Amino acid sequence: MEGTNSFKTLNGHVVICNCNEKVKTIVEELQNSTVQAPLDVVLIVQDSKLWQMNPNWHPIISGTSRFLVIYGRPTDETVLRKAQISSARSAIILADPKHGKLADAPSSLNAIAIERANPQVHTVMELLSSMNRPHIEQSEINEIICLGEISEKLIASSCITPGVTNIFENLLTTEDGTPQIFIDSIPQRARQLSFRQLSRKFILNEAPFLLIGFIRHLRNETRIVINPKSIGLLSKDTPLPGRSKLITMGYQKPDFLPYL
Image (cartoon, rainbow, N blue to C red; front, side, top):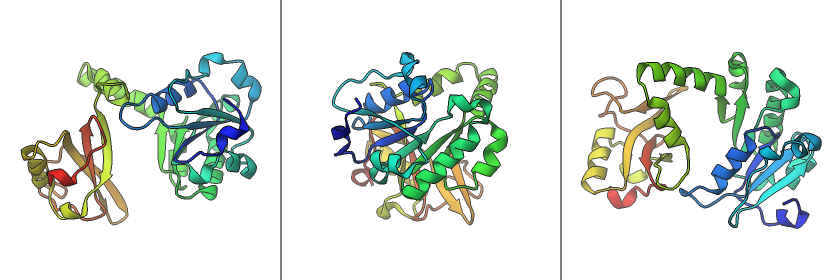
């Protein structure tokens, strides 16, 4: 769908910059999710011929969610305004195939333009070369996904624990009947409680989710702790202050308050 009238009511949508073979899967996962309401998606395409010559990249749209295509540069303020980046919840910057292995540099410029247009939007960037990570991490990009790093770690983990790749594949899909991982701010009522205390409350009150870890800020460092140890700086009994986040696994976004 590419009608201009379709852009009038966009809010809380996802903006994808650049097109490659990942567009189809990403859009279909966002719009077929059983965990949350399907999301409208706006795709900004720089090379119209590239997009049109690769119909296998085009997602199959079903239901009421919208998939809208804009032709232009993601660094163009006019294009970003048309995509209503100011009201978007997330922006995904994919590697542009026409730049080959050098796509990280233009992707960074796209991310900078998006962050300038909407500092609150959650930006996710596809990184081709792990060597560029230290430079990209100095920017305001929220998440950097380097597929090379992920695949290397999965290969190594599969050798140590055969079958672990199947578990990750199951967790990363939004198909019906598969659990998801959620990250949420700790409720005010639960602040200063420990992982052990919260886990006990959730289990005894039969919460429909499982607490599997937490995120804790230490000075200038953010630590992600999964299945914390019984002793140490960030253990099961470490109090979790207000800036902490809880990591849970379940079939829908958790509501903590009824189970505290």
